Image (cartoon, rainbow, N blue to C red):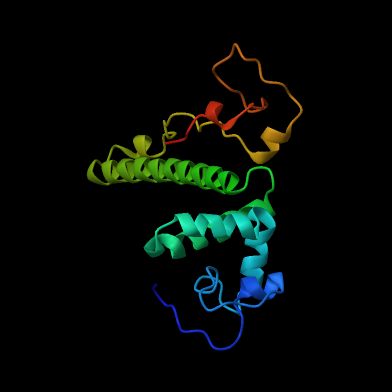
Length: 174
């Protein structure tokens, strides 16, 4: 276990939170140090101590630290956004990525026109021309999912003001 230090006489965060005596071979001790009570409290609130211990027992020991970090991240995201959890964060990051790709395409187009204008003195009209890029894509936001509009199952394309029944129907932005 990376970064694992032998414990002193204090209990791990899980045993402190659950108000029980921490045994020497406690499954939680290597991953929830005594000063990480809030981390365990969030994980416990979302997943429950019993489920977390079952998950940790089933996971190989070399992957347990990553598992605990994933559980802590998912618990934090689920507490912030109870409906979408980390899926909402992923959708937000995907949307931001597409916006940045669009901005990059605009910048590259402007740079190309500037370079063309610099090499040809009569190309100043080209430099001042409007950028011709594809339209910016429509995005679903969390507010769009919460709208009270209904989704018609016969339509395969979505507009900005429709809701979806499950995440399989949401088009990926990649």
